[in-house]
Structure formats: C-alpha cells, structure tokens
Image (cartoon, rainbow, N blue to C red; front, side):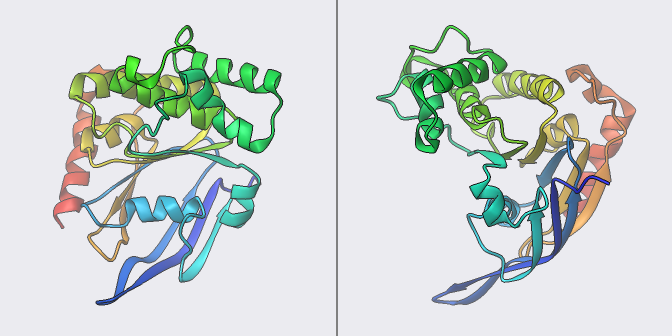
Length: 254
C-alpha cells in the first residue's frame, strides 16, 4: 500500500516565550492521502499555519512524529517534495514574472533552458501564458497570486502547501481562483494542504476538511466531503454543501 503523502501522529509544538511556554499544537494526528485536497480551518491562532510550517520543516515539533512522502520533513524539504504558497504573493518587483517563477530553479541549479521550459509550463498551468515579460506591479492581485502558485509548481513537487493564499482578495476574484485551483488540482493530481478562514472556500475546494480548536490547536473534527470531485460554484446552493458548512460552523462555535 502506498504511504500517505502526509502522516502526523500526536504532534505537539510548544513555543518558549519570555512570558512562558505557549502550546501551539496539541496531539495532532492526521493522515493525508496522495492526491487529496485537504483544507484546515479554525479560529485565528489555532495553529493552522503552524501545522503547515511543521509539514514544511519551517518549525520543529516538540513531540510526536510527522512524515512527508514517507520521510522526515527535513528529508522531504531537501528532496523538494513540496511547493509552498504563502499568504502574500512575495514576488520580487525588479524581476519579471518569468524570472520570479525561475528563482527557485536557479537556486536548485537547473540550467537556463530547463528553467525556461519549466517556468513556461508552470505559467501555462495557471493561465498566465503571455505574461512572462510583465513585472508584478503590472498584474492584478489575483494574477500575482497565480504567479506565486506557478513558482511553487515550477519544480513539479508532489505536494502543494497553501497558507491562505486568497485571503486578501475580493470575493469575485477569490471565487474565480477557487475554480482555477480546482481545475489545476484535477489536471496535476497533486496533494494539496490548504489553510483558510473561509467556510465556503473550505467546503468548495476540499475532499476533506480538518476543523481545529482555539489554542492549543487540536483537530476536533475531520469531515469527508460528499461533493463530487468535479464541481462548480453553483454547488454551493446544494443541500450537501450547506450541511457540511453547518457542521463546520457548529464545530467552530464549540
């Protein structure tokens, strides 16, 4: 049997601060299968982003165990097993969109031809073909975030970690990018771990939704989505959608 893409067992993380220890994560146990789209939702400060950072080896747990593609997070990072999309696009204004996407490939030592080929393919996947020579300030906020996703896709990692990438965008742009992300997921088959504060976004995008409690962050519910993998925005009016949204809302209130 193929190992889970992400497998966490009793993960704890306690930060030591000048005011004493702060428990950010408590006994988090979770398994994410290859090709799943799993969203994390919970109140601010519940550890959603911290958990994503533990998966990415940007934070080290103080207890428990986590595996990414069967490896430690450190080994997975060195093996380039994942791409990371942050809340802000984080594009360098003095580099063209193409060169922003190429940046991790330059750091990894890919030759010029391979960098160009991978960057063009990644930009095509996010529907930014033809914008290679533009600069970030010439693109809308939504297009900049798509360029950020392209940068994470450029080295073709199996896993995409996304930390509330659409939170700062208006609802119309957010809806469009949600549709585009689902299409991208369907075409690439990547495993996606997605942090959000939006209940409709979590329900619309996910095969499973992980509900987390206020600090210390615990997993209080894991909801398997009854929605079909192929879905459009009209599904948000369906009874199944509304039922899952209501269950999440109850969990967050509890």
